[in-house]
Amino acid sequence: MKKIILIAASLLLISALLFADNPSGAANIEAVAKTSTSDEAGRGQIAISNPDYRVTPGDIYGLAFVVGSNTLEYKIVVDATYKIRVANLAVLDGSGKTFLTLKKQVEEIVSKNYPMSGVQFSLVTPAVFSVIVKGEVTSTYEYSAWALTRLSTVLGSHLTAYSSQRNITVTSSAGTVKNYDLYKAFRFGDMSQNPYLRPGDVITINKFDRKVSISGAVKRGGSYELKDGENLIQLIEYYGDGFKEQADLSRVEITRIVDAKDKTGQKIFLNLENMDKDYELKNYDSIYVDTLSDRMPVMFMEGAVMQSSSQHTGDADFVLAEGSTKVTVSFNLDENYGSFLRRRKNWFVSPVSDIKNAYIERGNQIIPIDISKILYDPDYYCDILVEPNDVLQIPFIQFFVSVAGSVYNPGRYPYLPNKTYEYYIGLAGGFKTTENARESVKIKTVDGKKLSKTDIILPETTITAKTNSFLFYFNQYAPVITTILSIITSLFTIMIYAHGGSLIPYSSL
Image (tube, rainbow, N blue to C red; front, side, top):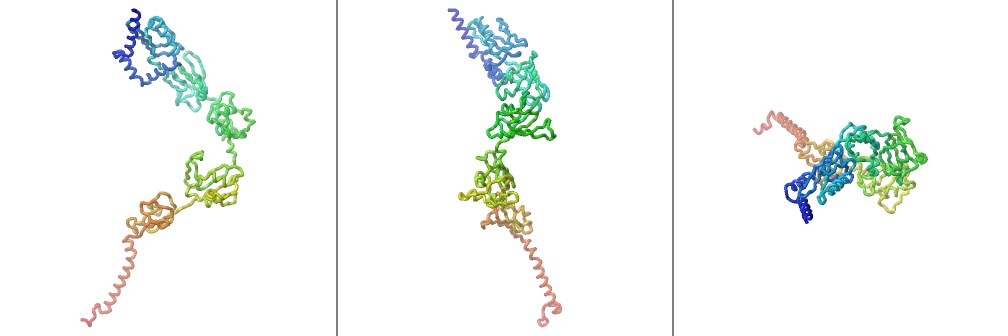
């Protein structure tokens, strides 16, 4: 009966320590609350839940259990010898062990000596240690790591253009040397090639031997570092993940810089036979695999042609480039311009594309073609075949705005959308202030509709700067008035002299 009471009392005491509102329990709970958002607490939670966390010098563990009516608590710091004293019960060797393995051993030892003691063993603070990174890096440096820091984490931005990620050497504090290949970790998830670091590790980044690139009709284009004995077949099948369905297997192009016969590099063209022999690749070789569409014949469209904002023209937005543009377009052999242009209807939706007066340049021959009929007349059939190197010219429809009256340079000026009268008056040199008062204008569209100054100018509108200045009219007619007054004055003078110096006749005196 006494044993049962003792066990019950022990359990109640443990519960009180964990949950009761006493100073000791409150302090523990508060400490967890304050540090749960810190990096240290975050690492501790990760370490406890990760079965790979290994006991590390610098770890701080907490051990608590009940003996009789007393609660015993121990703070255990792991030193460089990895020796862990479990109260006064045993000394364990933690080297090479995970935290979960050590926890199990400690709890078994305590429980064996003190049954029903409610033993608890926890990781309070994971250790932090330094590793050295050297070799093909911008400069040798130290990195602060912990037991769940992987090799790839310490590289950061310190690699150079010649650093290898497939030949990285890690030398342990015990002198053990291992090489790792991060490509296998990143590409295939082989995390044995991206190991956790340990205290005293020295990481040496080696230079790569060969790095090549592949693009075009392969599933995983990119730049790859090749191992010894790996060449064209491995590059295409292993790294590039094989050809795409539209690959042209009869033509693979290699651009070679290193060991090239020409200083500017050389082009090497391979066929299936060369590829079957696993063509040897050099450092910095660039491989391009043609697609079948690359081998199709091409023609050109030039002028007021809309361009797609995406390579996939089905749902893309089309925009008109500023000024004339030239587009290279592939086509199927024996295709006529009817089917060719209907499939590209969105290329000609611009209001400034003069599709009625388009024409084809074919050598010295000019062939008119009415694209509006092809696109919008269902009964129209075009039998003109598309030929390689044809140039389809789409002229611009050019609108103008006329500026007349009291401006310095009256004339016709190219129309631009969303402009007011001020823009075109500016093109014409501005108002003649001696002739035009208060910038008075008369604006009429091509169909005679009057516009106000705030309206947007439409194509073929006429803007007339009014001549309404008083000084202008005065200066214009002043010479005539002066002349008339001079004549009148002269007549009066003659009449005076004719009458003896007086205009009044003597008979009336």
